[in-house]
Image (cartoon, rainbow, N blue to C red; front, side):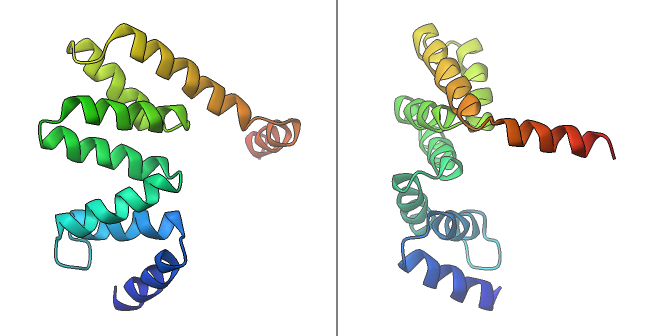
Length: 134
C-alpha cells in the first residue's frame, strides 16, 4: 500500500477527485493504513466538492452514523442526481422507513434518470449490443 498511498496523495494534491475518494476509503475503512476518520472525511469532502458521487454517498453514510439524518439525505440526493445507484437505493430504503419525504425521493428519481440518460449514445448502445453477442 505504500506506493499506492504515495501516488494517490500526489494525485490528490493535484486535485484529482478519484484519488481523494480512494484515500478517504483507505482512511475510512483502514485499508492499508491506520483508520483515521478525520482524514477520511477530509478526503471525502474534497472528492465530493470535485463531483465524485461515491464520496458524496460515503459522506451521507458518515452523517447517518452520527445521527445527522437531514445531512445524510442531502448527500444521497446529490449522489443520486449524479447517477449513483447506491445513493438512490439508500433514499428508497429511507423513504420506506419514513425518513425521506416523497417529494425528495421523486426529485432524486428524476435527477438520477436524467443523469443516466445523459450518458446514453448510439455508440454506447452499439458497443453494448456487440458485447452481448460474444
